[in-house]
Image (tube, rainbow, N blue to C red; front, side):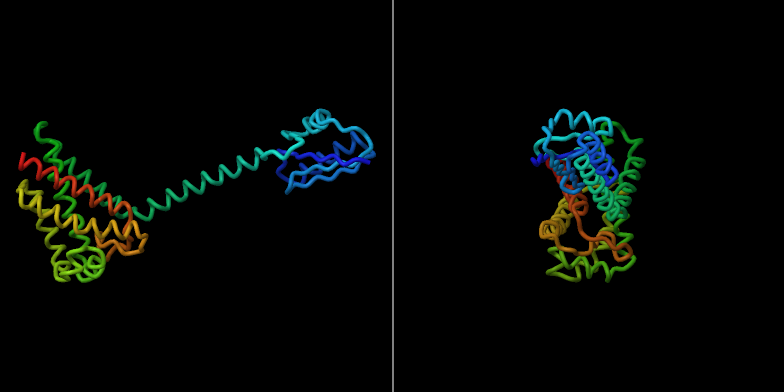
Length: 256
């Protein structure tokens, strides 16, 4: 008696195992056939000569099965795992952006409003007007959320903003600073010292936000005030970086 060891791919259930075992048993009535769904190992014990090509002819009519002398990756198993990974990845992406939905919606409102306000501007000044209105809408929208609970905002803001850590009263007046800046930009005014001031306050926030993001700390994002619970994330960092770039561009326009 001789043991033949093979590996079967394509099996997904016990019915597959039973069908393959029965077909091989019918072809080799005197043989002992053992097949495992978990290990995919096929063991045939017989005095007859077993040919791999014949075995594949036997199981080929049963379904998409393949018998090999060496263990090969199960195509169905791989496919199912890839699909599972794809679903997991999509779920992670969905959950990530769903958690940041309030901030993303606020930024989309700011962008849409800025486009509407600047759309009728002279084409040579369209981009500059858009940036100015973007700054104005940004400060107006986020100052409103902060003003709903100034003390609550200040408590969160002082945990990461560099200036607020040193001067707590600054965090208490910051929502009013944002409101003033918003009204200032929406009125069509621009000035070099205002752009410099905006860049400095945004740098203070961005430094703190960067430390939080890279150290993977869970700290409440003060930008949404106390009304909306949201942790600091890469989106918060991106939001601040955009503001720094816009203020830097405005400074460049003044000095060039």
